[in-house]
Image (cartoon, rainbow, N blue to C red; front, top):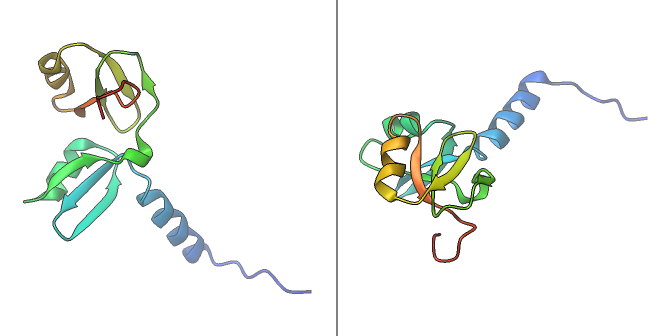
Length: 106
């Protein structure tokens, strides 16, 4: 019978790499995209001359049906009908994005 070899370091590395690719914010540069960030501010700091965007694979389930959402590392509050109000609310804690569940807002 084969013996199971336990290697905590390998398991941790696998878990970390899987989780790192699943974060909601991504640094986007001309040569790479890294979705490792759970806060928009951390993403912007890491971006340097690049940009920071939302990982569409990890967009939180939108709460609300308004056209604009404040997206943080853990939620998408879609209660904004005005883009400027959305941006103001998102400042320092997330980013304002179009509600992906409304046609034409992606």
